[in-house]
Length: 150
Image (cartoon, rainbow, N blue to C red):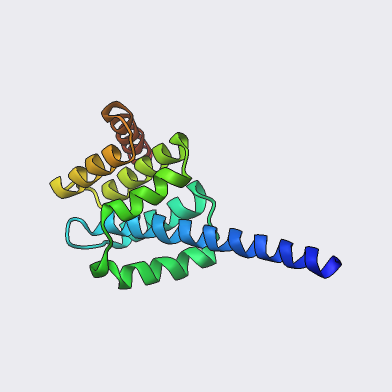
């Protein structure tokens, strides 16, 4: 009986770890996609992705480094926005989606310029995540405020 309970608990922990890894992979993939929208990924964008995943989404720094490295390698094999947003809509609440949009704005702004493709991507993502233009604009303002304070 004790072994049976241990197996159940181990399976639950294993499932939680798989879910956490899936979250990290999708978040990282989406952030790399946003950073690469202008055709290049700067060191400042990679650092911002790392910091966002660790500080905002409370991901493990070691895992972040591994997944980020893999995401950058696979940046040309990107998935559709629907792939990312369908998972996020199922698993994230409104506040976490807003944090994601703000983090994406910070990544896009980290290289000092906003390319039209980058702002278009975030606008499309906001729509797919059911984030209003007002909320997305407010997230952009918060990201700009953070950048100007540095």
